[in-house]
Figure (cartoon, rainbow, N blue to C red):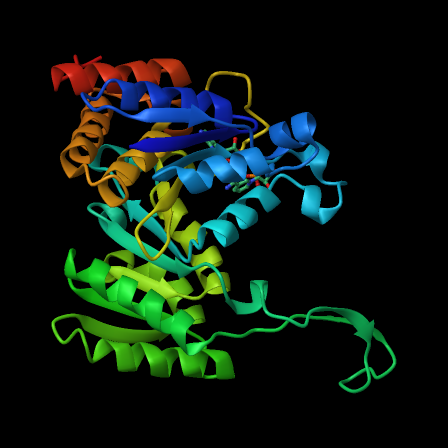
Length: 363
Ligand code: NAD
């Protein structure tokens, strides 16, 4: 099993060190090879995704990714900005399905801004299509308007589009994922206004005919945004397009209290994937040793389950994280009165200790 390890920028290097430590504590044999990506790669090679990094990612069975970006790169031409590395990896590796579980750990119920009864036991999965939609549709650009409300004025435009195969493959992914959970899919669209999403709704409904054991409902995106904060436990699997998924998955992430807890996976059609925390490089806390490494450690668990066919090892990591939380260990982002505040490295050490002993002393 070969893993490409791409720590990236900011807290990326700090949280990745902990995830690697946890992987090394398992009784499995991995080949892990590290490479630069994002701003760090731009500094060293003049590009955020150098060929050497891309080739390593292509050759590996899975990619474990930290985070990229720093405000100091905001003035660079767009193709050279650190975040372009993620888009490049998605494109070259054919990653079209983004999985973002939003799980509320019993011990962290108090960290959410919602009432405990609304989120206790929350376990939903947002599946976002990653390669189509208005983010990639052509043409796009700026021009002089020839019609509309202000002919002759400068305007900007993008193109929203989805093809049938793009919708079919993400719908299959969602129905298959739902079969392993509570067998319910909510497809989120804006079919009342957008032609693209009427088509989306029609195609998802057609694919559903192959999954009679799974319940399907459709919801407009504005209602979905409301329902996520009103009654999030009503959802099981949510499937949606690239832009709506971008927004709703961040909203769902915050339901659980901290973005520092949330892993994600982006998969290709063979379940090869890129695994990364849902958060960014957090330049505001980089280098301080206080970042929460659990999202990255849980991303490593997803990698073991989805791409490396090691479900028992994934379960072990997830249960080690639960016992560390039960023992009261907290990084600053999830800390509350009476808990033991720890830094990035101590949190990683605690997970390793829980993995090895299967229990951890209460603080
Ligand atoms: P961010 O997710 O980096 O940080 C948002 C807030 O959450 C900050 O206050 C940060 O300190 C906190 N935070 C994030 N992760 C944390 C963790 N593990 N532990 C504790 N606190 C944590 O988002 P941002 O500030 O909007 O962006 C910073 C940089 O990251 C930008 O350059 C942005 O483009 C980039 N970014 C990268 C990715 C990625 O690599 N996939 C995703 C989002 C943003």
